[in-house]
Length: 331
Image (cartoon, rainbow, N blue to C red; front, top):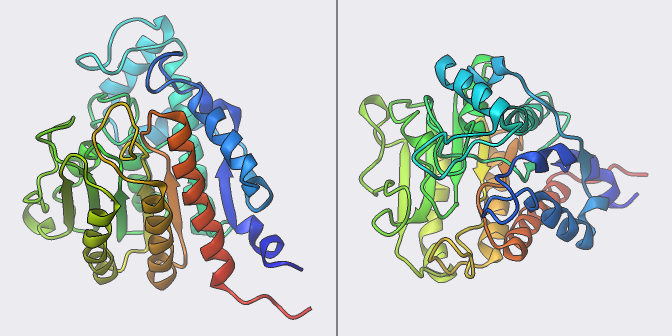
């Protein structure tokens, strides 16, 4: 029995077509074609033969209400029926079926969370997820429901885990997560992003380290425009030490690919090597502290080819580190 066959069921990748229904129309940076582009690259790399392919799962309003206010959830439901209007100042337009499409994202993320906690999976990837800008009471930056925040609340309220680490390498600061948990000492945040003086949402200064009892549990790392892999990898070891010291029970990775050179909305110049090495590093930390439990969520990325390449490298690392994790039984 080969190691690939032995461990393929330990890494779940959610590729159900319903995930692709979350998008703001063809031609929009966050269009519904992002999932298909990833799946083509994923299959071409042969990773469909090395992972467990998971169908999308639709969540429900009860899931969403662990993080979002009831007034906001009702607004999304109403705007979804008409497909008209905006949910924020202009970045997040309503579309018909938006409520249901958003529930496919949150449901898939929470299904992955449950399977990881139960030990049915060791690692998982949900490519259309990581909607980290949505606030508890509103949408922002293409993000309707904040599946990252919903996952954190679900880990606490449903699964009884407390010490969770949230790592975000999207070019945009994960403001919806940071400010929702800025006073929570049991959520460690590591967020590498383009400096907010040059890029939406304009937040994530290095001085934002948590508030009150949570001070020192958040690590914001703003990168200058045109930062490359060399600078990223100079800074990453401090993040590894930070996470090892925190010793999380579960790791969430928002692996947005809009920090790659060539992305049309940002200025950073990273390559998919960052995604590969960050994912591998976090898997090793998860093995030390969290029984291997790591969930990757795709996040942003608006050049289809580059985004797909980065996400493929994340999955490749999930598979390789899982293969390396345990020796094969003797035949």
